[in-house]
Image 1 (tube, helix red, strand yellow):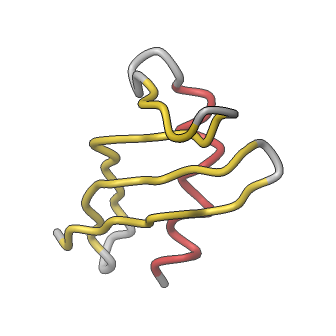
Image 2 (cartoon, helix red, strand yellow):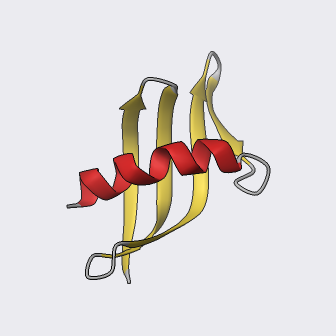
Image 3 (cartoon, rainbow, N blue to C red):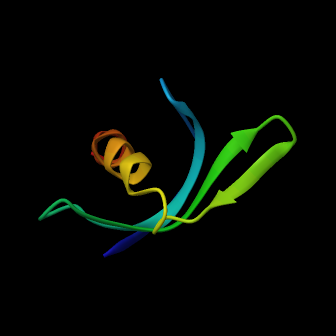
Length: 66
């Protein structure tokens, strides 16, 4: 697993900072920390309470990593 930190990824549903690990061979992604840009700066999201956001981000992150 390769550690990654995407400091800024722009999506149709927000701007995010993502930290996690990625296995390029089997395209396995694990997000450990997720921040969203708000009006007052970055705020940490609870990845367990925002599974729909994580699901939307996963293909974008995998595409970014490959």
